[in-house]
Structure formats: C-alpha cells, structure tokens
Image (tube, rainbow, N blue to C red; front, side, top):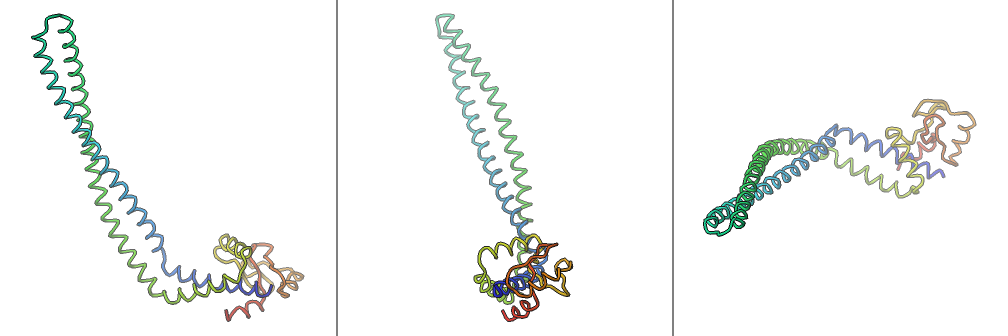
Length: 242
C-alpha cells in the first residue's frame, strides 16, 4: 500500500509539472483548435456552395433545353392546325399549344430562380473564400507560435511524459480512475500532502485519529471536506526520487 500511495503522489507531481508546461502555451492550443474547426467549416461550406452552383446551373440548362424543345413542338403544332380536317383535332392541338406555353412560362420562371440562386451562391462563395484565406493565414500564424513554444519545452515535456508512463504502469486501473476523477473535479490537484495536520488542498483540519492511521500508509485516505487523496510526509519524501 505504501508503494501505491507513493506512485499516486508521484503521478500527481508529474502531472502538475506537465500542467505548468501546458500553461506556458497560454490560449494558443485553444486558438489553434478553434481556427482549425473554422477552416474545416469554411471549406465544407465552400464545397456545398460549389455543389449548389453546379446543381442549379444544370437545372437551368435543362430547363433552357426543355424550352427550346417545347418551342419547336409549339411551332410544329401550329403548322399542323392548318392541316387538320376536324374540329376535334384542331382543339387537341390547341390544348397542346396552350399546355406547352404554360410549361414554357413556368420553366422561364424556374430559370430565373435557378440563375438567382447561382448568382447569390457565387457572391457568398467569394466571401467564404476570403474568410477561408484569412482563417488559414491566422491558423498558420498561431500554429507557428504554438510550435515555437512547444519546441522550447519539448525536451522537458518528453522527460515528464516518459516519467508519467513509467509511473502509470505501476498503478492499477481502479486507483487510476479514482485519481483521474478527483483530478478532473479539483482543477488538476487530486493527491495532496497533509501539512500541519491539515489538508493542503482545502486547508481543513484532519482529525487526530485519522492522522494516526494516515501516517501508517496502510490505505488510501481522502479528505472529508474536499475529497482529495491525502498522503503523509513519508510518502512525499520517498516519492521524490521517482
């Protein structure tokens, strides 16, 4: 059990060091993530607009072709009207001419609608391309800044990550989950030493009987007030060389 407490405290110290190195990056990681999402979103929007433009151009061209075909049919029907011998045939051709005329009228409106969509989509696409260019430039700038900061501390960060991996394999799954759960809830600070008979996480006193048991390093104790894992001075001392 003493080793279990020792490794948990060592893990905490390592994670705090890694947290410090992460803080040196400031808000750059968040900015890079946000800008990456923005760039991807703008690229996706650009593709949608390009697809919309293409689709409506095809629709417009199709409607235009239909109008040409219908116009030719109307001319043919008009010529046929002079050749028919019965009123029934004449009326049938008249209906065809009228229906073709109505269809052409609707298709003409559709073309205006399709062309309008294309014009608006093109205008929006230009704006998106400008926004994308700006976002890409900003992303490259922030990524460069982040890379420079990361490079400055790369060696130290790799050292602590290596230490963390070595310690982590010595902690069982249940204790690791407990540690991570408390760490998440307590702003990164899950394991704390007892100082002057008080939890150094929340500064509340630890009862005398609990202090006696805690110094035996025979089980995991948590603070009654904040829930952090408490360790004795001995655990702090023997964890220093990990």
